Length: 104
Image 1 (cartoon, rainbow, N blue to C red):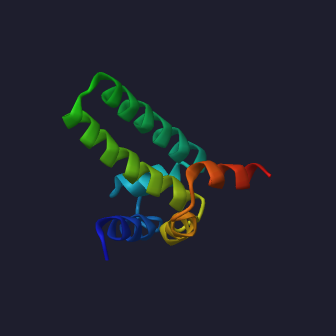
Image 2 (tube, rainbow, N blue to C red):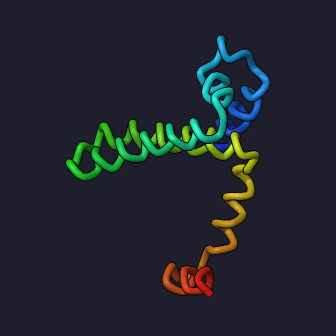
Image 3 (cartoon, one colour):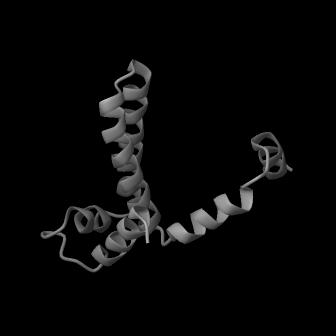
């Protein structure tokens, strides 16, 4: 089990935790919309770090983006395994060809 699998499992377990004892539980208790908003905020922070070339901050913000992506997925009951299966399905397909398949 890799770090993303462990993190996704921890987030899933936090769904039933007391929001006063866990940041993840608190965020999930606020609902999927808040989880999506927080993901967006973190994504923007990562974009800014990338744009200015701040490698150290980009690394930290990218970790925040991955965490908040997993929280957002959990809030909508989308398993990391499903996302990974979709990536696996796309493996070996040109990005141009994959995008064309989606638009048809």
